[in-house]
Image (cartoon, rainbow, N blue to C red; front, side, top):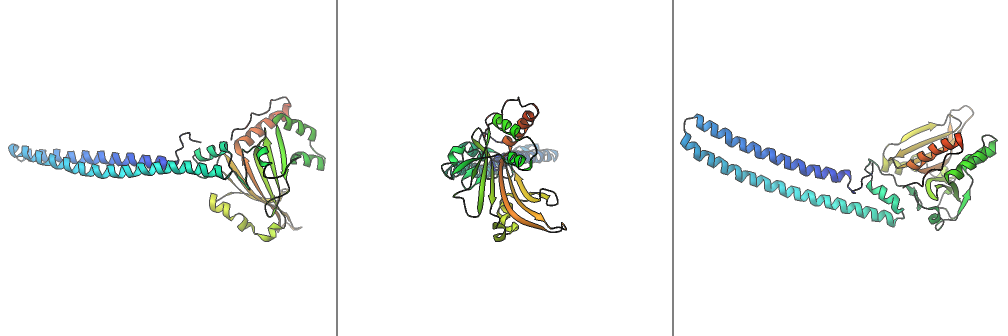
Length: 308
């Protein structure tokens, strides 16, 4: 879940460390006091009550000096830890400023810094980020409207109801866009899907020839190194003919996929293209739920404007 105070797991761990130091100090002080008490009991049992008075005073004085010495050490460590916490908070704010300078949308940047998760997936690539208005991307790339891929498949293969899908998209305020010019090297096209003008799906399609220039292991290396072991989806023996790695931090999902074809014997899978997808998870889930409702009734209201 996101946190509104800007603290991370590291910050809370440092605070906990300070509390543990103070708890240790309290227990140590109690231990020394118990030593004085037990020494006094031992002296009284030996039959020297008068001498015990001075003995208790001596032990009590030693206890106070030892306690103050130990407390000075703990306070010094606590001050150091508190300074470390302040540096962590400053670093968090600095990270947010860096992300803004890199072009991340402010709303998504806030979510990116605040959330408290094991991994934090960068929400986009090539200066295109989830949550960005499509109007902003049009200032960087020549963007043009495109047909929904699902509707295109319906029309191509003659199944489904493309007109119904178009009506549902209008209700959802969902639109598709494509970038096919002035693209980064080895990129064939970039498709963007929006709700109320805000990008919630980024699909990057690479040139088929790119698979001959870079292996799958190298193509996915940096994502694995950054985000850890992926979830694997192996559909090479199905009609999908695809194999993919995916990561999710609860807000952003990243999928790296390779498509290809099987030989006649279905023993060798030949890679034909690479694809990368970024999806805003919450918006996608809301879209799917409303789409299902609209698909059944075609009268349900559209979804609310997504909050990134």
